[in-house]
Each structure stands twice: as C-alpha cells, then as structure tokens.
Amino acid sequence: MKFKDELKIVGFPYFISLTFWIAFGIMAAYWVLYFADIGLSFTQIGLIFIANSIAMFLFEIPTGAVAVTFGRKVSVGLAYLTAGGAYLAMLLSGANFWLLFCFHFIAGIGWTMESGAFEAWFVDTVKHKKKSKHLHHLMGRWRSMGSIGFIIGPFIGATLIGYGYDKALLATSLLTICLGLTILIFGKEIYFKKQKTHIKENIKSTIKNAKFAINYAKKHSTIILLTIISFLFILGTTLVYSSYQPHVVNMGIKPSYIGYALSIAGILMAIQLNYSKKIKDFFGSNKRSLIVISSLFVLAGITMGLTKYIPLLFIAMILYAGFYDMAGNQAPAFREILNKVIPSKHRASILSVSAWVGALGFILGDLSFGLIADTLGPRTGVLTGVGIILLAVLLYFKLPKE
Image (cartoon, rainbow, N blue to C red; front, side, top):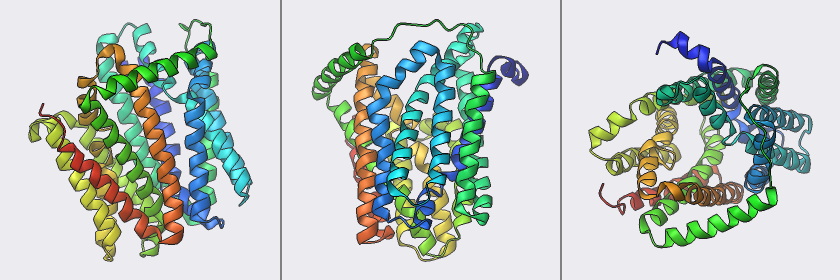
C-alpha cells in the first residue's frame, strides 16, 4: 500500500500520534527539574508523581464508560483536554504542593480515558474502511509516527528550557489542549454505536476476573516469573527516571543536553523497534535477545550512575534511554513470550492483573525516589534503581527455553 493511500485511511490518527509524542516529549526530560526549580523537595515531587499513578489505577474502569457511551473519538479528545488543562493549571499553581498534587491526579484521570481507546479507534477505523489485511502494517506505521514525534519533542524541549522550564510545560499544556480540540472537532467515528454501560457490574466482573487470573497464574510459573520481572523493571526504571535528571545536572550536564540525549535515543529506539524481528533472529530467541539487550541497558545505567567523565555520561544517557523499549516488559520479545504462555480466552484478565502490579511498581518507584534522593542523593537513586533492574535481568535466565 502506498503512503498516500494510507493517509486517506488513517492519516488523521497518524497526525494525532505524531503530535501527541511531540507534546509528551517536550517535558519528558524535565518534570523533576521543573518541580525542583520551583522549590519542591524530591519527596514532594515523588508524591506528586504518585497522584497520577493512583488516579490511573482507580479510574481505569469508570472512565472506560466514556468510550463505550460516547465513542472512542470523544474519549481520546476529552483525555487530551483534561490532561492538558490539568498541566496548564499546574503551571498556574506555582509551588503550592496540594494544588499540584490535585491537578496531577486530574491529569491521571484524563489519561485513563485515552488508555486503550485510541488503539481501539484506530483498529475499528481500518476495519470500517475494509483494510483489515493491512492492519499489521498500518499499526506499525502508526507507532513509528509516535517514534518520530519523540525524536522531535525532546529537541524542542531542550530549546525551550533555555527560556525557563515553565516555557516547556506551557508548550506541552497548550499543544495537548489543542490536540484534544482538534480530535473533538475534526475526528470521525461515524460507525460508532452507543452501548449501555454498567459500571458497577463491570467492577464486579473485573474483580472476579482478577481472582481467576491470580489463581491461574499460581499454577503457571512462567506467568508469575514474567509478572515479577515486569514489576521489578517498572520499579527500577521509575526510580532511575526520576533520579537521573537531577543527578546528571549535578555532574555538570547542561539541562538542555538531557533533551538532546532523548532525541538521539529516540532514533535508536525507532531503529530497534523496526528491526525487532531481525534482532531476535540474530540472537536466536526472544529470551537471549532480552538477556543481551537488558544487560547493555543495565551497563549503561551503571555508567550513568558512576562516571564523572561528561562525554561518557552523555553517551550512557543516550544508550540507557535507547535500550529501554527493547529491554523490559514492553519489549516485543517480552510481549511475545508472555502472549505465548497465556491462552487467548484468559489474556485480558491476566494482562489486567499484570497492569495492576505494574501500577504498584510505579507508585513504589516514585515513593522510593523521593525518600532516597532527599536523604542519600539522586546518584544513589540511580544506582539503586539500576540494581533493581539487574535483579529483573537475572530472572530472565530462569525463563524456559523457547
């Protein structure tokens, strides 16, 4: 299929994905530095991040009713409006901790309306245009638009912070709000049919499915092992992500160079994801691919935590961010192993429980960051996080042969 034909079918979702990741990328390297710059302690920053994770955990099911009742287009549009509006409110809140906590909580509620809805909207659009045979190709292109956006976004952020961290947050806020308005005004979902929603019944069903998934996982050691690895990876990377920003600045890296490093890493991520199948074939299996790349990921993290040589530190920052998507629980190799051991009829329930465990990892990671960075320093936070990731890497060796 020619690219111009793709644009006629899913050009709008391509544009949304590209623009969203530009907006997200602008502040990706600077959230901790922004909050620290306005006078918050690392513990307070960690608690603000936790507010977002708690909101996403609590409102995943209730906000799902928006997509079912009003359509995925409306759900995604409202998600960006809510999150962008909350970020703008945070900017106007100054250093008021409780206002920042509340607005970050609201942003988390907003993101739950986007979770799953955008992908479902994309897939149904392709099916409605009777192009299902091209779905795999179109999905790959759609995700690659996000990769391009994440190359552009951090570069813009690196430029804007020269005028202040608040300028980068303002850009992220306004771009996200404009994106939401664009979706609501110009987005199309003419095939949508309103459905009845029963939130109470959905919650009961979710609890029932969760109990079943936990009991099922107890009888299948590989699922338990993968869930533990996922938890440790999320816990460790969350701790590193929040700690490394102030750490590298303390070591002498200019804040703008964090954005440049993420932009370069975005190129590396896009290449790896595009050739993930060939990378797996080169190493001989998904397991070996995960072990090798995650080991390089840990090595980059250790270097980032220990080196005092600025050029090497910059390279380590690039490699750490660049290997992220291929090392952990979102890597194609990891997802392939997981999906092979989960029967299709139980997949949704088990993956939901895995997501809840991941949410716990985010919460504990943010809490640990605040406590460790305030008492022992950001460098200790980086090295502690890398140590936790190393435990996950060692557990890869326990996975059965494919």
